[in-house]
Image (cartoon, rainbow, N blue to C red; front, side):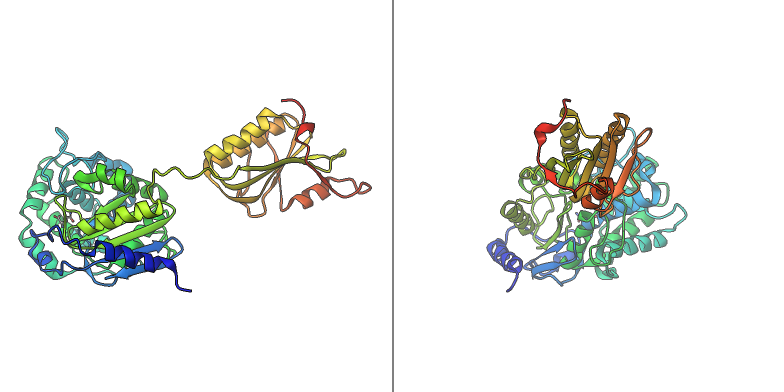
Length: 446
Ligand code: GLN
């Protein structure tokens, strides 16, 4: 059977194909020469599957879609403090090439507008790097996100360099405020190289998927960037990625995104998917007309808006019962699914509302798929308090979801592979084997 997804993509491309409104970017002559009818879309899953339709392997220049990735590299190479001191994170509500800087400090408002992106470019690599070395580090970094070696389109690069007056003006302003501390021309040259990196829709989807996958490229398996940096980058994409249409985008589409003047558009849906489209005709904001339409369709057809509140997950507490109701009774609290703060709160409440009468308490994680850091800490704190109340606590954790559990002062947990194993160890040899009784009512008072 053929997958339904490429058919869906083909159908949506056909629906937007007739829209020929907008114009390809005219201020970079070489871009104006590109075929405006190109149209393609790719979905990249977080386990490395690619679905595409239309022009998925045509190369074009990445342009501003390079900005979030270069920002990521700067954060990774220099750290948050030095980067935030020079580039803010406030949406500007202005066009991408607006010559505007924060009053007094001269700090660009965010790394998605050109002023911030030029600054972020200057912060990639170590301080000692010369402009050429820095541009190389940028191409290497973008390549790691894409999972293949990328190169620069020299013709587009030269064409943009010849008409870079506006970016040079921005860079000179940045230099006057000491946001840039070197020759602005070298920085703009490097920034334009960065914008001239050739990519395909497939590459862009993979780059987006790397962000959606917490910084690990789904195909190469390489960790390209740390999770804290990914969160920062996705946040800035969500608030500033679409320039002066960021609010419309946030409400209509709701996917952290970035557009480029060559007609590319990416969206990274955290924990789910990377999406990319290509269509060179741009709207007044400099965003691809048909790209925006495609993303609107994707978001509404498939419920991809990040603010879409998911249907409530199955109860985290699957069962609360006593195994072998005799002298060696074990209170078993069986958990399931993915546990985050709200789920952990349910676990805490389950135990606080009805304190176990049994000495032995087992928290059974066998059916748990994931447990995040705060949930892990809350569960261990419950284990610690149970110990202090005189209980013996077992953690049934065959997948080592909580490796080396340390409940802290006064707490103690015994990790076991499976519940039967645990109960058997507890039952007196002369007694019959373990049995399970569901007896919520037998529990002692809170
Ligand atoms: N290289 C382009 C510029 O700096 C990138 C702009 C964009 O894609 N929005 O003007």
